[in-house]
Length: 443
Image 1 (cartoon, rainbow, N blue to C red):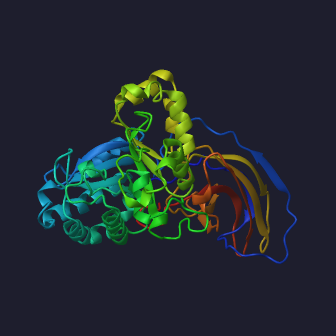
Image 2: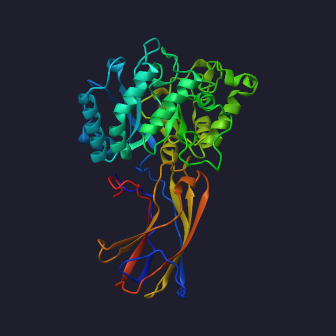
Image 3: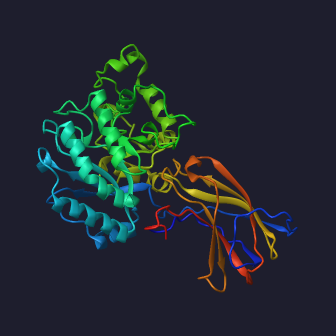
């Protein structure tokens, strides 16, 4: 996986060091602080876990993913692939060893190419086609468990799938859209998939499954609970006034909504989603605009809604009618830059020199110019790199959690790093790094 490109700061300072420890010194040196102002770039560059994805098919009988082809996708500016696995032939049988081995190989191809997947498993390609029974879904999840546990490092997000047409949680032939069955699918999927969000197609599905109209609170954000790990995907973004039923309660005939149906209009549900996406991702795809959409899919509304709802990813391949409109109207570069997170350095103050046993101090302002925070866990490090010996690199972990860096907000970091007394003299660049926590791709 490529390192995050944050247009890292490179203020050079004179220092006496070989390794750096995160500890507080009792006697701080009085070295002068140097102030630096940074000018953010408008370049469109690759960052993981965000942006447009390129669609790739999957499932038994499909062509295996090829690492070279995936590298070409990365070189074209995409760090995500949309990987949909259709499993029609397993509706009434176990997954085969051959299919599980193919999944394993496909995940390795992603890892070799430096991309991650937005994945979805499903049994039906159209309304009217059957899905599988709840028992069969659970059995398949048990079979998938070891593969997902070994390879979740290259899964950015997973769409809930499994239920109904296209795995979109409607038109189930096995009553899987009841509140009880939806919850059974969600809980089981999160039990077999480590550390990743599971995104449901309709906000009302989450409300019904958890019997709650309350969005995730500050208190339970990222606490590992089922509710805190359930996000949203919208597969008809901007295509009608309700995004073709995404925000309409008409298809949700659950007793849970009795007495509150009149309050669940489109605006109310969008506000619910906006509050949720402070802590869970939303993505999906556009679809061909319906006549009632008017100019809803044009640039002004698209940018407004992506910012309000904090969009992190979208399908590059569909619907081209909408995406071509963004190209023609000129907002596509802004969408590409801002989808997900985009961290811009603003100002910094740094110790210009330090001495053995002294302290390196810094203050830094970062603005997230993207629509959303980086939802998946990431470490935060200060990196010191020797100017004359670039292979001499020292990394110090910081306690800050980038998942709380919301789009449009300015983040202020302030730390004092203790310097031991056995560090060689030299000039060092000061860098900021946000590596993936998984050793397999952190470099």
